[in-house]
Image (tube, rainbow, N blue to C red):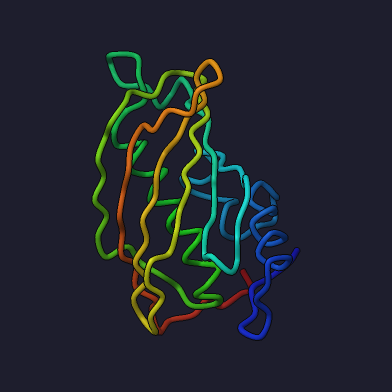
Length: 162
């Protein structure tokens, strides 16, 4: 397992760390909501501070109308933001300060939504980000929603490598 260390930050290291999302020994994704959501690493750009995480719309995530529940979409944005922020915060724990979401199109069962995150400000304690959710429908890239968020890097660190 690749773990986060303050002295190691590179494109290769970011790709290696993000690629471990589904690993059963990964302390970030082996419990809680991430086990249910099953995030998949798509791509990242260390220099541009960008990251793309995908989630498939699963049956348990549907609302009564048969589309993806809005709360699940928000949760996926939050997870994509959080994973991106975690890489740059290293061993520090983080928390969501605010998250604003705009819903543009419905997400259907089986859709794979790519959440494309970009850090717009990386400070000592606050990290601001924006993201877009995209699905591929019949060869067309469809924007399903946008979000902005601010996360806080806490003084508290993990007691185990992440």
